[in-house]
Amino acid sequence: MSNRSAHYPEHPQHHHAHDHARAPQRRPAHGHHRPDRNGYTIVHHGKAVRFGPVVFWIVAGSIVIMGAWSAATATYFAFRDDVLTRLIARQAEMQYAYEDRIAELRARVDRTTSRQLLDQEQYDQKLNQIMRRQALLESRAAALNAIPDTAPTGSIKPTARGPQSTDAGAATGVPKPSPINDTVIFVTPPDREARLESRTSPAARPRTEFAKASGVDSVLTNLQSALDKVEGRQTAALNSVEESYESRMRRMRSVITDLGLDMAQLEAATPKGGVGGPFIPVTRPSSDASTFDRQLYRINLSRAQVDKLTRTLSLVPYRKPVIGNVEFSSGFGVRSDPFLGRPAMHSGLDFRASTGDPVRATAHGKIINAGWSGGYGRMVEIDHGNGLSTRYGHLSAINVKVGQQVTIGQVIGEVGSTGRSTGPHLHYETRIDGDAVDPQKFLRAGVRLSQG
Image (cartoon, rainbow, N blue to C red):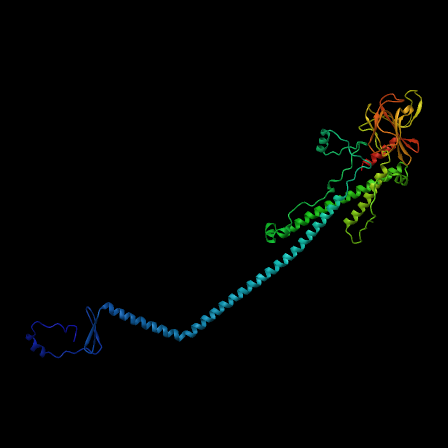
């Protein structure tokens, strides 16, 4: 049976004999197929199955693909162990590499952390040292500020002046003269009050931000430099104060010696006033004390001595009895008498002044004479103790009474021309144990003291 077996001729009776005369046709073998112009036919046991070209090639392709897949699968299973071994080895190698890298990074992190901890510890130590040093310098600044300003011995506060003079003095910054001796009041050196400049403590800021902002090393160096400058200013201020006290103490003692006065008698005659309190001995610095503490101890001793000498010298009349740039109209010693024209002893100094100008006490004391006294006219005499006394003659007015205590700079009268006088002036005398001495000797001592 073939693909043309279904076609029969329209007149089979005409060919019947002819067909039998032909040789019998060969049938296709079992399971074979043969192509046709329109497809393929598979014959099996006399049955034929016809396929189109598309279906045929699909089936054929599927068979080829399945065969290839089967071959690949067989190959895979055949070499599976080797592939798995290589994959496992590769994964293990990668894992070991990652672990080594992680270990290396951890070691690096540990080293960095250790270095940071070490840097942090060193930074904290340096910072603590700086903070302790800053606290020490602040305490030293407080100790320096506690030292009182040194002023001329026996100087008094200026009297009230008009606003113009006050403003002018403040604007120019020039020290005002003492109302008694017209000398410049001692001014403490500019570095006297050495203080730490206010700054934000580095400990108050996080270390990371602090380090990022300016660098730890540079900041610590800047802090050390700043503290060195402050300590240098404090040392200079301390040296200046010590030198000032020592110099002033030497001048005071030399003045007392040059005037021929007895220090012990002056100290005994010095009024004590209302003082007292429990005795608390001064503790000397230990052997391991700092140079600053030992120097501060010496300064305190010198200051105590200066204060004692200041109280002692308050009884010494070394100031001028009138204010201003006054002139001497007549000096101490032998002169021609203004009325008789003959040589005569002048026992004091004549200060040229105008009638009504104030006359001031040149030292602490007690009024022992206040009234008319012969050629002195109206005269005031003050006993300063220890044999020292002063006289103020030719006054136009007297403002004190006998027995009254007066202080330095207190107005005791007014300039005039009473008594044996040719015109307005002040006759001023200085006496030791009743004997007149040259007042300029005391005034020169006052100038020496005022230079400190």
